[in-house]
Image 1 (tube, rainbow, N blue to C red):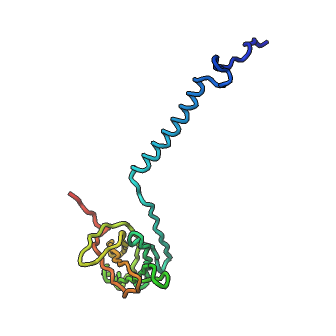
Image 2 (image 1 turned 120 degrees about the vertical axis):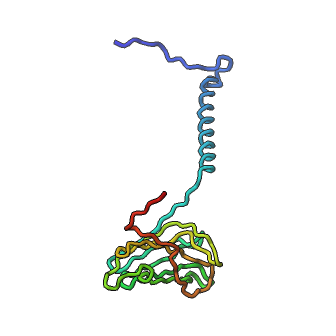
Image 3 (image 1 turned 90 degrees about the vertical axis):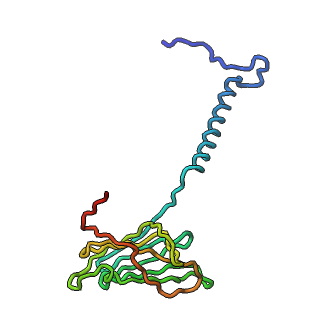
Length: 193
């Protein structure tokens, strides 16, 4: 058997019953809105001062005869596409840009990697290629892209970094040779002091 607690009691304004809910209930409702608005404002403020990191996605593909990668060249300039031919050791690339007549490849790049890695002609070279960000100081009138092409070769045991020069232009430019900015051996132990 249940005990009867009596009739439900609701708080009404004793002076003016037509006002409905009590002052306490109204204050609680207002406090919820205040916390909601404060949280929203704090979230917006935090998001605006938090360091922003751009999203970067690089693409690559390969098979047993060649590899292809995309390389961001500059702010708002899009990507360059590079193809490494494993059979010839030749790295070629092109960057697309808007022109007066539409969008087209306007900048071209090339490099014979077999010369850079001093490949023994009796050995079959084995390359790996990737892209990474690089801060390269401009000099000699060249403007460098924000990323570089990195190539490793197994028989030489070396990695070379190739910066990508670019110029904002709307006309087709002649092919530009790439030059390794630096190399390092990945098979030898390096000691840092």
